[in-house]
Image (cartoon, rainbow, N blue to C red; front, side, top):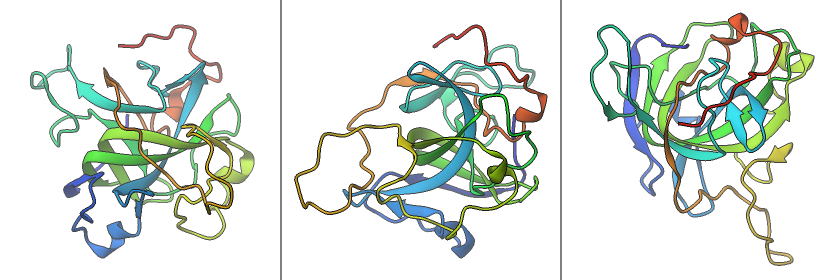
Length: 220
């Protein structure tokens, strides 16, 4: 899985206070309709029913969840602790760069656009396309798209986008908006289940993943 390099920032998102981040990281922040600051990021996964499956073939996760860590059989790992943690690879993984380098455009992979909140770690990532590796306590899947060959060649047009009326298929469905109420914007669900995840943004495990979806799905 992606471990990243030097720790660039350790902060809390998902509140109405804008995180105090260096300028290169601030461009990845956006606000929900309720004025909460979240990190806008990207990753890949398979899908099985209502769950998304990391390319590590770890436990599936729903569209909105909080991560827990229970390291087992990992040399040097500490006991149960809050996720994410700088000394562990726990938490939900995602990347700042919307490009999908390093993987063939086949195998049923989905490109997920996610909003990260709770405790968030930003780490250097020197993979193809470079950028930032995020590891977060909470992840909300906002947009789901089938990965295509275009995704492996070019960045999405328009650069950084705020989550107004996301295209593709939205993962978190809200109630109908009143007529003429304006754009439908991102709103975090009131609560999220906690579960153990072994996550990967997709770029690291993907080159080792098979072209078939996992046959066994285990929700911790």
